[in-house]
Length: 213
Image (tube, rainbow, N blue to C red; front, side, top):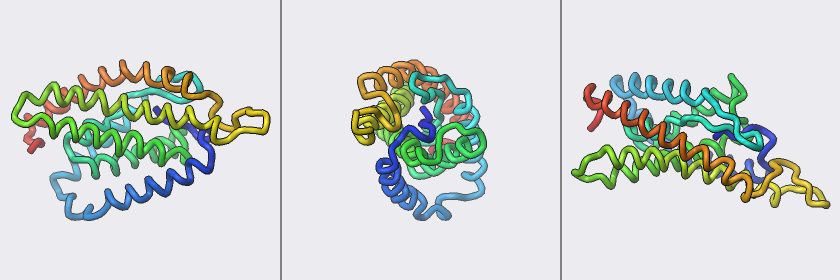
């Protein structure tokens, strides 16, 4: 699901930096009060897990990639704001160390996957009430993969309309939404199902360790 450099027009990614930068500031508010000697080791472990599983990438048509994400695990255990910040760090390190995703695309990747994905998972968890949490966790994880994938596909798909030569030749991502959406979304339907199983396994482990409220 990483977007590499050179796929997004400057007028789009600069605006995305402004929007996502504001979201980073919001997420960082009161950060010291939310971190303690119990939370930090757990957060480090799950963030590292998200980093590792995100490095197993499946090439998708057009030059993007599909992979397990891990945002649902982070949101399940730490809430939207910490999950968003942790996953933004994951994306930054992957871009800088391995070229997986781009710095210009970082705000789009972070907003779509880190913020929207975490919010979707948290919303689904909030709907479970006193009922069996497993279906809600599975559905939340699946949607936390699929909805960001759709957003990223739409962002890529509108690039030819945003920046093109006088003859209509795209300057950045070359395919419209009719190609980008199915090419990116369909593989993530499978990825979302696999990640749901992984998240349920993490939930069971976290429950035995007393990590869940």
